Length: 421
Image (cartoon, rainbow, N blue to C red):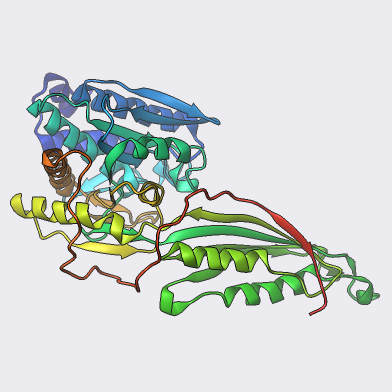
């Protein structure tokens, strides 16, 4: 046991030492999505730290083989802290990218996205727990284990937790210190084509070329991007063929779709559903659909204004708000109409990249900010947040987005056969 470990047990460490120790503990546990043992170990530590602060241990919810930690508030209408313990880094990454600290920066797989945010969340809970304030029954904590692959098993739990909360605070990484007040929604599609194989030299006319059809469909679907509205339809992965002298019988291409409004996601979704192959001998199958609705700015502005006031009161750097293309679980919570503020995690850079790092001092600052924001929310009348009065420009602005829409997005597949066009 190191000297720091001994002092931690004795309660003699500074907060900076506690933060570094906790972060090291989590990063030294490899927890890629689907690695149940690693995620379980992370959740066990978080459950212990948070349970001591909140006064409740919560429970591990197992859903389709994935574990999620949920410490549910005793009283509905409180604040939900939301995060995830899974990372994109495969087991074995620590051997070449170990946890290190130098010049106030911690490095290691998952340190920025988002284990440092989880440590900041624990710090915020400890601040509030030490104050009493009539108990911690209005605080919930949800840490999921499958966010990096789309929150397939945790989505319903996330929505249930958000629906009983007046506000959701998400400790995902900041963007150069800015919180995230809007996120593009996302769609994920796989287009499969089945033709007929034939010898490319002897009798190509007897084949139905799935690869040629895929190339045509790829171009047609990509044209549904709209630069003016910030809508992107990006082919990201493709496969076809078995040999250089064989007409390909099968082909597949995957698409990533992003848009600032649900109207745009639905427009593109309709385009995918209406696509037909030009060759009547080729069958087309479309799987996937809208994965996450947008986090629209109207659902974040009120909380952002409160957070900006809290940051100013704490003497912190003025808090910026930004709009980003990547999605998070905040897309789900905001779509329910629950006020949501994302990107409350620490400063750093390199999410999903080998140069990933997090600023240790900012973990403490973010704990102060989140605790202060919860205090401010508590002082508001029940079920009320101030009406947004936007007086500044968000970074990466985009045109106005559409109205609210239902949020029952289900992946579904369609199969069509080609027609002459």
